[in-house]
Amino acid sequence: MFYKVVVLLIYTVIPLPLYVCILIGVVYSLLFELLSGSRLDSHYVKPFTKLALHACIHLLGVHLFILTQIRQRKTFVKVGQSLLAKEDLEKEMVFKDQMIESVMPKKYAEELLNTDLRRPSASLESNCRTSNATTAGRSSGAESTAGILATQQGPNGGHGSLTINTAPDYRKFRRFNMNVMPDVSILFADIAGFTKMSSNKSANELVNLLNDLFGRFDNLCRICKLEKISTLGKGYLAPKVYKK
Image (cartoon, rainbow, N blue to C red; front, top):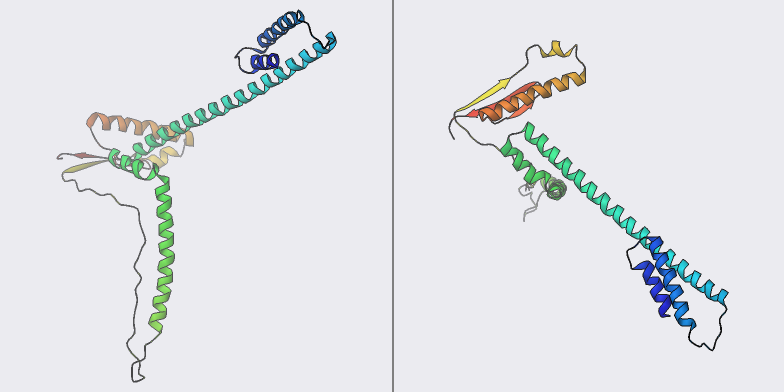
């Protein structure tokens, strides 16, 4: 029994290649037979039977070794795929941040990234609240309409006054950011004759041209310490604040 356990541990526990494990197992089997053959045994076992038993034990060890390797390799592949997916997600997030910062002022871009894009569950919860509130508002509106049409009878059988129930508006809109900045100059750059120029250019050439032009404007904004507002088609907006 001890011999079987040792052979199986050689194949499953020791982190060695398969051929090394087989070599160690065969040497251990030979030593075991040499040392145990010197003892007197009341039950005589034929050599062919012993050889078959040793072969079965080693085949079982090889089978366990292969199963262990398959399980470890599958785990390695899954971990590698998760790391690659995480890296791609981080690259996509960085690209999205750069794209948003290129079309919006830095201050508002940071607020947008910190509030909306970083917490999708919050926006989902807001949509759920809005839809529920709208449904509740519709039902309340139906009840108020019924209240308008119904009249209350007075103590003498006459008609009383009409009661009107107004349902509160629970609609929730996106928060609007607006700051007052005095003494601000806004630069608006436009391309003269853009329609005529774009008629003889392909879409790729036109996009590359605008990308290069707006990239130069971004560089000038960094040099002159301007804050870019947005890019509107072929127009470019950038303000200059003289007093903070």
